[in-house]
Each structure stands twice: as structure tokens, then as C-alpha cells.
Amino acid sequence: MSGLLAQLVTDNGDLSSTVQIVAVIVTVLLLAFVLELVRRRRLVERYALIWITAALAMVVLAVWRGGLDFFGNLIGVADPVNGIFLIAFAVVFALLLNFSVAISRLSEETKILAQTVSRLDAEIRELRGEGPTANGHEAGALDDPEVAEQTEILEN
Amino acid sequence: MASTNRTLRKLAIVPAYNEEDMVGRVVRDIKRHAPDFDVVVVDDGSVDTTAFVAERHGATVLRQPFNLGIGGAMQAGYKFALHRDYDVAVQVDGDGQHKPEYLPEMVDVLQTSGAEADMVYGSRFLGDPGYKVPFMRKLGNRIFGIVLTRICHQPITDPTSGFRMVNRNGIELFARDYPHDYPEVEAILMLHSNRLRIHEVHVKMNARGFGESSIDYSRAAYYMVKVMLALFIGLLRRRPTPMDGPPPDTGEFRAVAPGAASAGAHSPREEEGKA
Image (cartoon, rainbow over all chains, first blue to last red; front, side, top):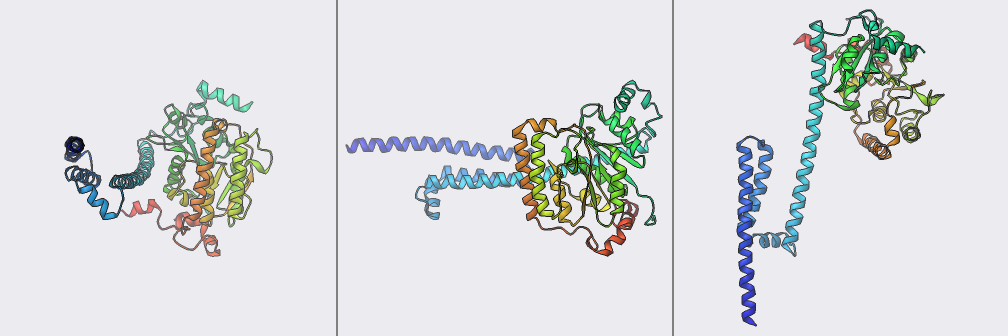
């Protein structure tokens, strides 16, 4: 009986260490990936900081076995696993909200740029004399069969 | 600059997205019925020849580099109006729904009620709408109409009508801030909370535009929810002060209003001049 228990414990222990090794490898790779993105300037520092912190936290929890229980006790969660889900959810929620705000700002800025570009474009065309036909009615617009047809439709 | 009783500079803003078949006629109709209006077509990222057709008919074209939606497109038009010191700007949809023959009447109302109206808009529901208005559109109008009538303390019979003419105050407001997706209803609230005055005239419209949205119920529902949300958030917003200077409902402002275009010290043009 006690042998079986011991067996279970060691099995369990072995399993845990396998999981731990995998967890450490994955989280370290994640951290390396984030750092690589920053190095290639694919991530601006502002967001890099958030992700590096998140990746580091995961590495720490993977390496330090008692870490989860320690933090769990610290904030008084009965089951540390629930605690980590709660925290992870809160962090992801905050991040997504942050991104929505950032995207809203970006689209607003993009809109302003587009509007400005269109105005400058119109001004350049005017300066170059490529603007609207000075008087659409006489400058051949009505000679165009399509336009003439539209005129007929309209007048009926 | 100019004296206060100079002739008003008027601009028709024609938002158009893939309207090559209609936009030419719209531009020409404006020039025919309201020759004192300059026409700017806002080509909202069309993939057809809208810009080309509009330009050939004598309109200035603001080519948006990509599709901004009606709100962004109209704001581009209002910014253009502000930049070029127009006194009056009117939205005439590029799909031919709005009839330019009403423009002179709208200008008259805007001017004669100059002290009372900053925006004159064409309502289909003050009389015969001119075509069979789809049920969903009617319903939406009814609901928003009731809400806006309550908020504005004046009848708003056609809050989704895009056929609207504003004076300099309206141009300045909309150039600075204009709602995004379905702007018409929210814009009325903006006018109200900026203490700009709204006046309705009856117009008939052509059965064009937005036809499909009345069939698509999920989109209609989204429209309802989105606009309602915009309204209530708009109500929660702190009331912005309209402009530098006295609020528009004082007598002092009225006296200044006709020349506000030239009197406003912060027109972008003048800033450019200084730079």
C-alpha cells in the first residue's frame, strides 16, 4: 500500500518535472520570440515592455515551482490555479482594452491624414491646372454620349 | 477682409462612393439649379471612375485614399469648406437622392432665419416624401425622431435625412468633429449640444440610396443600436463650448455671425498666411 503510494508520488513527481521542463522551454522560447520582435523593430518599445513583462512572469512561474502557491497564499486564493486564471484573464482584458483604445486613436489619426491628403491632392491638381473642367457644360461634357443620355433621362 | 454683407460663398458637398453613373448628373443638377454653389465631390475611395466623371462635370474632387465611410467623407468636405472660407455648406448625396432644386429655398431659409437657424435640413416627413419610404427607414426615423424631439425640445421629423445645409457655425463644428458610421442622427445631437439652431423644410426625395439596408434586418438592427448608443453617450458627454467667443444664442454673436468667416481669427488660411 505504502509502496503504491510512493510509486504514485514519484510518478507524479516525474510527470511534474516533465511538465515543468516543457513549460520552462515554452516560456523561454516565448520570451526569446518577444525579444527578437523588439530587436527587429517589429514591436515598438511601448508594447514590448508589456509582453516582456508577461513572458518573464511566465518564465518565473515555470521555473519556480512554489511560486504559484506563494502568490496564491499572498492574495488568499484557495486554489492557486484559479488565481492564475483570474489574473491571466484580467491581464488579457486590460491588454485588449488597451489595444482597442490604441486602434481607435490610430484610425482617427489615419482618417485625419486621409482627409488632409485628399485636400492637398486637390490643391496640387488645381495649381497644375489639372483641376475640374472650368465649365463642365461647355467643355465637352455634353458632347459625351453618356452624359447626353443622362441629360435626356433627367429631362423626361 | 470682406465686409459683412458680401455675397455668401456657398459650397455643395457631394459624398460619392462608386457613383459613376449618378455623380455627373448630381453635379450638373446642382450647377443648373443653384449656380451660385461651388461643388466639391468627395470621392470616398471609389474603385470606379467617380472622380473622373465628377471632375469632367466641373466639380472639385477630394479623392480619399481609401474608404472612410460617409462620416469621414463628409468631414473632409466640411474641412475643405472651412479651409476655403465658405459661409454655407450643403450635403447633396452623390446617389441622386437629394434634389438640388431645393437649394435656393434652403439658402433663403438659412439667411432669412439667419438669427434662428445654423442648419436647415430637408425633411421628407413634413409632407409627401416623394417616394415610397421603406418601412424600416420610416420606423428608424420615427424612433430617433421621438428621442431627438425630446432632447432638442423641437420637432425633428426626419433625423436620418442627409440633405442638410449649415452656416459657418455648422461648418466649423463639423470640420472639427463629425460622427463616424451613421452620422446624421448623432450630428443633430451635436448641433443641439453646441447650441446651434436647427430648422426643417419640407423636401421630396428620390428613391435612391440605402435601399439595401432596409432589406437587411440585422444591419438595420445594428444601425439602431449603434445610433442609440451614440445618442446616449453623446448626452453623457460634457457639453463642449462651441467656439471661442460668445455662445451663439446671444445677441452679440448673431450680429457677428454673417461675417464670422472673415472675422474668425483662426481660420487655417490665415494661419498659413502668417507662417
